[in-house]
Length: 124
Image (cartoon, rainbow, N blue to C red; front, side, top):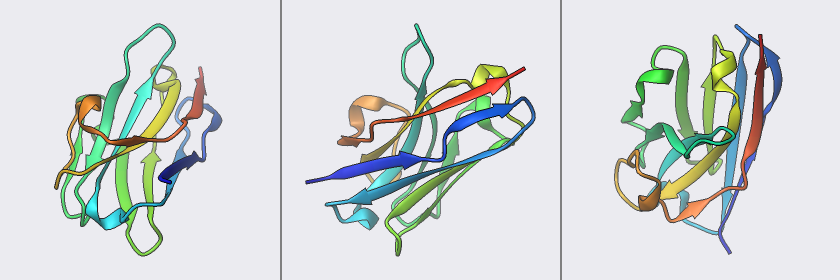
């Protein structure tokens, strides 16, 4: 059974940092690109970043460029999202997801597996 378990969310003041982790089990982690998505109340789920199977290629949507860093440790079956200079508009539930493609994508429908999400709240 495939499981993706996010952790590291919480309440932080604007300008602060959080590091999200996504621990994977039940799949060959290195055979999947990984993505981070977020969903704020009343809004659609949107991509934040994705990383290729081997970790050599990263993609970021404009809202996170220069502030967020996606990474992975295939030996630990874990993906990460380092978030710096957080803003109130970053408040959302953050999800990690696994995609069988080489590089991942910004489209939720391409991802085969999803975690349950972790809440990130940024206060002003």
